[in-house]
Amino acid sequence: MVTIMDKIIIENFSLEYSDGTESLRNINLHIPANQMTVLFGPAGGGKSTLLRAINRLNDLADVKHFSGKILLDGSDVLNKKLDTISLRRRVGMVFARPVVLPFSIRRNLTYGYELAGIRDPNILEEGIERSLHQAALWDEVKDRLDEPAISLSGGQQQRLCLARSIIQQPDIILLDEPTSGLDPISTLKVENSLQELKRDYTIVIAPHSIQQAARIADTAAFLLQGELIEVGLGEDIFTKPVDERTQRYIEGRYG
Image (cartoon, rainbow, N blue to C red; front, side, top):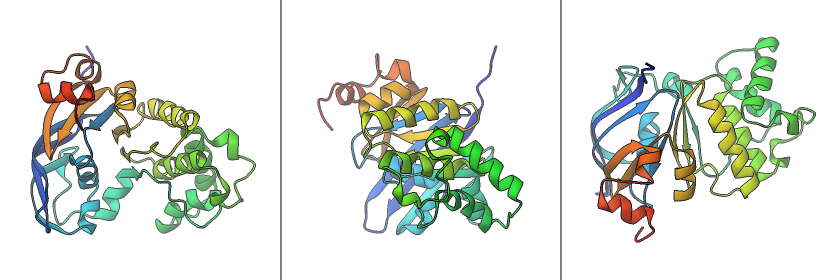
């Protein structure tokens, strides 16, 4: 029997912004290793806030109060003594809108290595080729690595951002609506890449549509107005949800 291990355990996590917005309330969620965990629900439900909490990007926001624990391999990422730079090397993030650096395709990928003081050309070249293969972009750009990254199409830029997030082989990849601005073909390429990547990484994603959520979810968690309403296997959540609110959202009756 194969045992699925939890990579992240979120315990009684709440967060309130300084403007009085209580974004998350008492979230309890287990995120399995090497699976695709989908956070879905209406806009404003807390999906992005929860993603950002996992790698402490909320430190950059105006947060009034937070409580609870977010355990990554047993260590609480919310510990104020934690080195957030090291954390973000372990937990990569891809946003809805691709943000490429004003450099070549090659340097977009090696920039993280540069910041870490890594200059070995063999390590750099191995990382470039591996990450581009994993992001299903190698064949399209292998002869263009010294061209500006901005010259790529939107879908290619998003896959470059995905490659950039995995070049240093993090433990976890977080994605916030990564295909919201992409055409169907580019969307499929990103989804296929993620299915391959979960063999090596734990993936947590807030998809841009309920259809995408149902396609890719191993585990699915429905968030509504800052509360975790229901969590379970994707095949169960999208076909036979337990909570009526989940059923109504899946059927498009609100949200």
